[in-house]
Amino acid sequence: MSMAYLSGYLLITFICVCFISSLLFSRVSVKYIDKHMEKDSVSPPSWDKGIGASASFYVLTILFNKYRIKNKLFDARFIANHTRPIDRVITAAHFVSATGMAISLSIVSYYQSN
Image 1 (cartoon, rainbow, N blue to C red):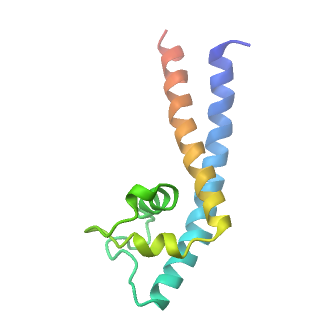
Image 2: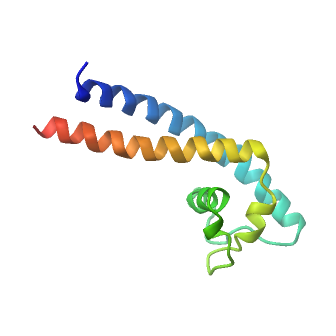
């Protein structure tokens, strides 16, 4: 099996996993975290009105300690406090699949151009 076919199959797999994990993350994890943040009288990001733009910030905050600071967009310290172990698993699956999808797409595009 050539690298082009393998990358194509990996791309399809990563697209499916990324779609499922992004749905789970936005519907389950983000809603849970936002609900618990409101209980602590910390409002969720006001600039995100339902389109899910804050999900990428939540992913980085949950996975990497470096992003758990208070910044202008939102207070990331509270996000890490309210994450459950299942949220970390969904977040890791989303991050790995999105990264793998980008890499696979690059490889497939390279082979398509040749």
